[in-house]
Length: 239
Image (cartoon, rainbow, N blue to C red; front, side, top):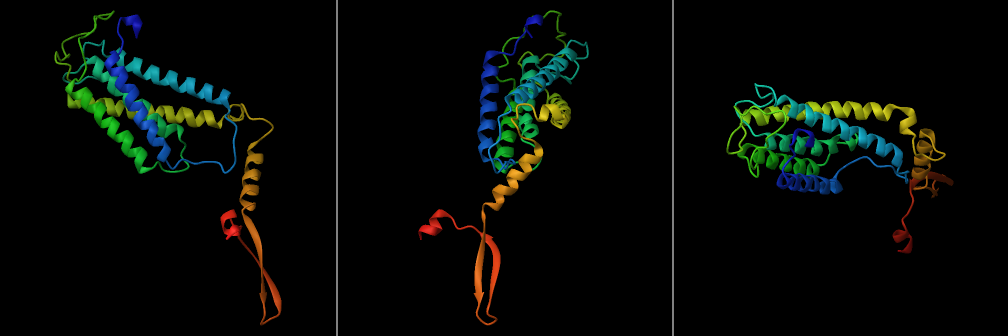
């Protein structure tokens, strides 16, 4: 937001990075869907989707900031601080993006939900109590100051409004992400000599490789019986 002579304070940017890292670490304990065989990185597809989602997140922040130039304060109710409101919105949307990009085949783990919820609560407290808010910027155009709290605090009502706005932004991003993954040329971008049918067949073959045929002799009837069973592991074979 340099063009309006305003940026998010460095202190708050540091905490944005810390909060994002805390949420990302919890991904290691998630229940996300996975393929039973190696898959390509599909870096061109990842780049296109990442840039698109990043632009949408930036637009959402710009829309939020733009409403604060209105005499009514836009999304700010009663009183608030520009820096803290932007900090809360950025923190919420960047963390909730994990729920969008992880896919919907499985539910997120409690560790992931708990980590993101804890970070969101901290960000909300930062916003309400005005921690590290600092002095206001003299922006171009001028931001109305009738609703700005000199101590950097933000009303609880404003925090709730920002939460609702962030939920709406996340829903829009989720719809865009879903639609982009339905585009066939983008979904196959970066894959080499492989299709969805190939992936399904390889998954079937991978599961079949774990199955063995066992033979049992029925002495009473004098016949052999064959049935499917899980293939013994190397440890079981050694024993």
